[in-house]
Image (cartoon, rainbow, N blue to C red):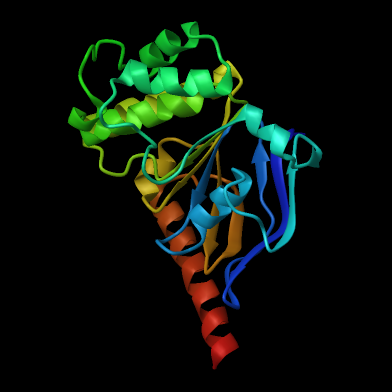
Length: 240
C-alpha cells in the first residue's frame, strides 16, 4: 500500500459565500509525481496555496506525513506558485544567496541547485534579463534550496517553449528518485500525461476523479471532459 505524503480531508475555501474549493479530499503518494488537472478557474491554485500555507482553509484538514499540517512543516516544503519571486537586479546566484541567508542554509547549496536546473553558467547576467524559461528554472531552484520532501508546482510550464518544457519535464521526473514528492497543477493534458504517475481531476472546486493515469491520450481527454461536464451539470442544477 502506498504511503501518502499529503492527504486532505473535505478541504474547502470560501470567498464571499462562493466555494472556490469544495470538500476536496486528495491523496498525494510519497515519492511520486501527482498531477492536479483542471480547467482555468477550477480551484487548482487555491488548493495548492492552502497546502503550501499561503492561505488558510475555510474548512477541512490537511495531513502531512500522517499528522495534522503545522507551520513547521514548511521547512520540508518547496513551492513555485504563480510568478517566481525574483529580484530582477540580482544574478541567479545572488537571488539564491538572499534565500539561503533568510533560511539559514549553507551557501554550498547554491551551486548544487543551479546545476540541477541548468543555470550554473549564467554568470553576472541579471534575472530581469532572463528568458521566461530561465526565470521559471530559477524559481524552481529557489523552491529546491531547502531540499524539500514535497515540491509544489503551479502550472510550471507556463510560458516555456517546447525545449524548455522537455527539460523541465525531465527534471521533475528525476525528483522522486531523490526522495522528493511532487504535486503539480496543469490544464494541459499532454503535459500531465508525460510527467505524472497519479492524477486528480477537479472541476468547479470539486474532485471528480483520482487515481491512475489513463492508458492513452484519448482516454485521458475523455475522462477530463466527462468530469468537467458532470460537475458543470451539478452546478447548473444547484442554481436552477
